[in-house]
Image (cartoon, rainbow, N blue to C red; front, side, top):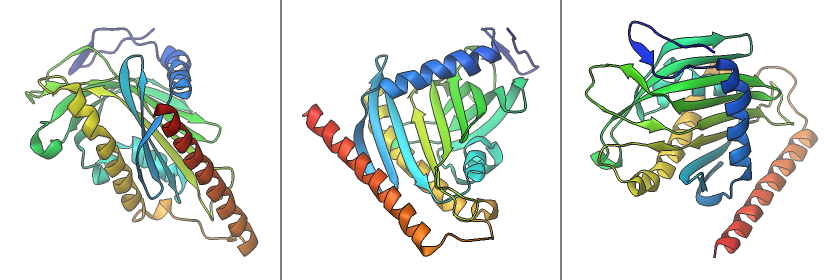
Length: 264
């Protein structure tokens, strides 16, 4: 077990980095896989769902992206890139590091959200434990708030992130010349203060949908996100790939429709 203490922050819990990687991540992925998701928004390649997990509302956002997986991961995890497109965040910074291995790391991050709901929700401050880990077909993150002694001097309400995650996956048909990346994000939080939970979860799906749209528009401007030069797929290969994607989207639509019937 490890604990972190810097001049700026002291945690009120010990952090076992290996347990975050092996136990917490596994438990989280199992909980979202078992959840009953209901479609609430759909636009272009993005779908937004909601589910109740352990009494909390969790929002899942799924987008198929024609960009390199490495660039998608960096946009999600790198504070410098993130702040270039994520208008929901005013500040995103690393405060401390607990463990840094070749394929994974655990650190402490601070985020300050922008005002939301036309100003009805003021900025909030988050202090979160964050895992970044490589997988067989991409990367995944896990983030949750921790109790700590930290004075930023911002005067903002300290909000709380329940276990949330980003999963970046190269699809089976993805190549450097014809990249295909699936981004799945889970988000759940308590803004605290005087904000009722219903207002948070009424606005959160729209916020997450806008976040993915902003990410797509940003990646269009990033050279390393674009297809690599080289052998392009043949017309036959492209047609087969498009058919595969259409089948996958039709299956998702069918699942969404079935879930809607079950809820009625």
